[in-house]
Length: 529
Image (cartoon, rainbow, N blue to C red; front, side, top):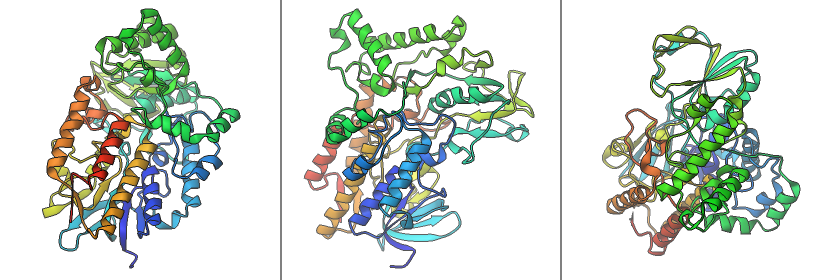
């Protein structure tokens, strides 16, 4: 087969792309990854900002498809830092001989389906062309940086960094006056580390979020060995949680507990740290009263930590707990007690423009040597929007998704045959531990292609009726919870002009069950030709 011909072209070399490549090759397909960066890693290649680390425990934020891999890799910390996750992904790449099937420094510009040949043509921004029967987008849910629309960026004389596009060489903030714009997850991780170096640090906050201590620590060898002695037990327990990772879920509703018992459970979860909070009460995201109690507990903790009462008030979130993704931190609130760190509230008066020396708000200028934009991502659809993807009758995916993403199971979109999206909108994705979600999707794609080959089908495509029903179901599930109650990136609310549609599906076990039912019913909801 010619160099530009393959059975499958995969776009993106993060966790999803690497596992899709490995799985396709095991299936006997010729497959190639096209990757914009010069190395593997996806999110963990681009996000090198200070303090970057995973918020899922290392022993769970890892592949489970190969037990030898699980046993041989040793994690050094409870929550792995970015550099260690990147090392792990390079290890996986070389261990399974994948590097020779990856074309780096190749940014995909277009992908077009030919109805006559039933093949995709994928072109890079430099005009290089590839053809394949299957086109798989493993472009990630949080892979396109969202830059705020602040005027006169070219005026500022100092460097401007974005946490999602960090320099591979790192950045030294020693003795500099630094601004951080944003207080989402990446900011919450970066701020304490930048504060250790900077002469002064000013944090611009539009809205306060909920963050819980990670209680990160070196990995306990005995603990790691105990888990590895029966890794399958941890994986099975995690797969039964709505998030796809172990939450040590409490089965009692808060409404069945006394005020003292609720307080004890809240204190226990604070000490556990991390995302285990989601397992505190089964009605946490369903009952406003339960949610209010947890939110009040968090506000009390902030009041205890922050020495200035007015500052504490500004740092207290006033949204529903969980409607925006909870963050996990190390000494975030404590950092604001330092004399050289200040918080600037921009909830009422946003940043107007850059100046030569810094930023201006309502005619007041703030001067800095460097500015860090920690303003998050164009989540879920951002990477797909930036590629001109054309399906049947040359319709673009962007046109089809003008009012919000339309998929069946988050895997396919009607009118785009033989095109798969790994952890796309309409799947659990960002509401879960991403790695088991990725593995489940890749294995679904593998099984579907195997089924096609065995039954001599050449085309698989989502049925539009099934797609419409699935999109309605995804939104119905979200609307039955409190997740719909604030302007979160789950809804695309952080990107001006983006349609307000709840994109991820809530609940890993019911989603897996649905996929299994679809397969059992001979790919119900898909059209096979």
